Image (cartoon, rainbow, N blue to C red; front, side):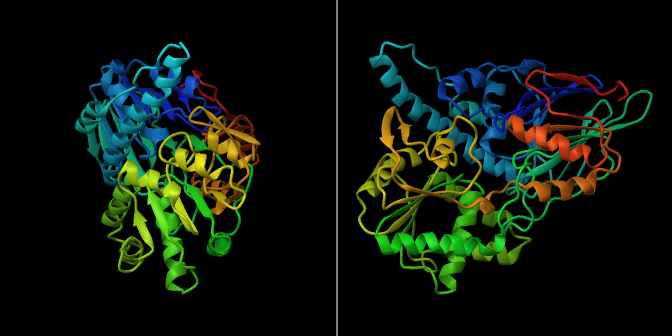
Length: 467
């Protein structure tokens, strides 16, 4: 078995790892790189592996930094199968179409400025017909049901506890001679006790582990006071008659926020502040959540009520672009939840243009912000922000509720590792910035696993050579 690391190595975006086993070439994830616009365009367009040589893709979950470049695979010759869980199939169908739409819209705006500046125009990465092709290649597979990939290679999905449908990926490779190798890929590991997901499973027997490192260096605040923090900011917004702007991923984070706001309303503590969800994708994703939470009837009922106008009359989902723009003229206290979560595209950008310079308004960050993203500059309180080519002073108040993150913190990561580490001989720290993967290496070694690596992009490993 051989491993090559091409994405989410020394960074948190563009998850993509290549496994070669028994003559098969298998890709773990195929995500979009997010960061500086020019660098992102170049990295996402230049596939590090030849798609035509791949036999299969195993997809951990639907977030765009893990799934978003699948259309480039099929566009460039991939003809194998893409395996993921049934909820991930449904989420990918809406998320990849949204990604294609946003690329067309944002590229038009960017190229209009570049043309005026005499610069070369960016080319479109993919379009909706490429998403249609991806969906024809996707094969849904439930948790814990082995997938025969051929050549004595089997894959199994286990619950990762991150977002709906997110999977740990176990890969078993039986060679012609010698022992079976078992690789486990954490994908994005969820924080325990999230309101809309079950805690991660602990598959046994892996000798090689790829573990995410996003929050390897810190713990999240207690989840007990998340409602109180949210309530404080909503109350502040109501008193100041201002705006609370929440950039949030349409899948996972938006549903969490609606869940907590609804609970506060049911408790009679939520001020009468209008809540606008400015993301058609979030509306579709919420319905997918309700559909697949059937086994968790209470969670499904609460989430369904949270988007039911008769149960939550102050909530409105925004549909058209004109309705979205009209929110900039809304007077009085209000909450806007808008994508994207890292502020790198989508409707949140024009809301930021309207909000950034207002000292009475609040920008609430509720998830990890990767390096070189606008969201990172906001959380670091940069004095000036460049938004859609124009510069704005950041005078709005900036707050963060890290406990809303769907990524496991340091304690949760180590508790999960303790539950799976029995036979591990080699651990690879991925999905983290350099200081985070270095921290993860130290944490793993402290648990008695000596062979730990933080790979760099393009680095290759032969796992059949005894450690």
